[in-house]
Amino acid sequence: MCQFLRMSRVLVVTLGTAGFGASCAAAGSGVDTIGGSSGRASIDGSAGGGRAGGGYAPTSGAGAGNGSSNSGGSVSGDVNGSSSGSTSTGASQSSAGSSGTPSSGSGSSASAIGGGPRGRDPTMLPTAKGPCPMMSNLNGTNATFAGQAATVWSGDPAKGPGPLLIYWFATGSNSMEPTWAIQMPQIQRIVAAGGAVVAQVKTTSMGSNTGDYVWYTGDAAIADEVVACGIQTQKINQRQIWTAGYSAGALQSVYMWYARSGYIAGAISYSGGDIGINKVALQDPSNLPVALASHGAAGQDVIVVDFNAGSHTWEKNNPTAFIVDCDDGGNHLSTGPRTAMAPQAIQMLFDHPFGMKPEPYASGLPSAWPMTCVPPPVPANH
Image (cartoon, rainbow, N blue to C red):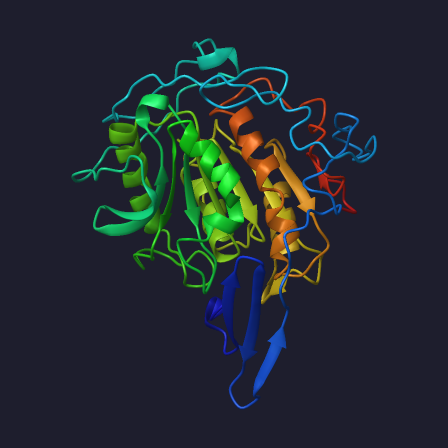
C-alpha cells in the first residue's frame, strides 16, 4: 500500500501477471524489501481443486476431503441458462432502461432466465447523468463515463442480459488488473453472457479516502454512471451487478458493498475488509450482498493495517450476511492463492442474484471450494 493513511513510510508496489513485489522506503532509512512474487497455483496445490464431498457444515468448517473439481456442487450456470452445475440458472431483468426512481422490487416470485436463481429487483438503481458511451463488444479498451475513463471488457447485449462487474485496482496497479485478479476465463464467461467488466482508470479524488488515497467515496458516482449506462446500452442484468478489488481496491469494493447495497448483488474482497474508514451505513438495509473475503494470515497480510483482521471485522459486523472467508495463510503479496479463488467467487455471484432467498449455499459450500474457505459463521480460530 502506498502512503497509507498518510504515514511517513511509503510502499511502492509493482504488479505483474505472476504476482507483485514491493519495496518500502522510509525517510533516512534506505529501502526495505517487503514480500515477493507468487505464482498462480491454487491454495491446495491443485488447479482450482476443492472438497469432493459437496461442502461442509457452516458452523464447524469440517470438510469431506479434497478433490479436483472446478465446478462441482454449484447450483447454477450463467444468465443465459447454460448450466455448469446441477441446475441451469439466470436472473430476470425487469427493464432494459434505467429508472428515475428507486425500484420497490418484485420479490422472489419473478420469472428467471433458464429457471435458476431469481432474486428480486434492486431497490436503488441510478440514472445516467450524461450521454452514455457505446460500451458493447469491447476487449480491454477504454470508454468514458461522466468524464472518467474506464477500461471495458464487454459482450453482445443480444446474448444477455449479462452481469456487470465493477473492478477497483490495487495501489500501484492499473485498470488491466482484472485480467489476473478475476482472470480471463471468468471475464470471458461474463462477456459471453452479454455482460461487462469495467475498471476505472483513475480516481476522481472526490469525497473521502477509503483506505490509502487510491480510491474515494466520490468514485461511487462514476460507478453509478457505469451501472446506469450498462442498463441503458449494454442491457445488463439488473440483478447481477457486482464489485471486486484487491488491497486498496478491495477496501473500495467493501465500501461499495455498504454504500451501494441498493443495487450491488455481490462483492469480492482480496485483502480488504472493513478498516473503519471505508464503512458506511447500508444504502438498502434489506439487502446484504453475498461476498468473498479472501486474505492471508493474521500478522502476515499486513501493510500498515492487518487485512486478515479487517476481513474478520467485516464479517463480524454483518453476522447475517453470507460472506465466505478464505485464509490462504500468505502475506499481503501472495496474489496467486488469493486470486485463485476467482472461479469459485464468480460462480457464487452467478448463484446469488440481488436479494436471493433462500440461501443457495445453506447446506455448505460447493465441492470446488478449498478447505481454507469457510461459510458464515466464521470460526473464531479461522
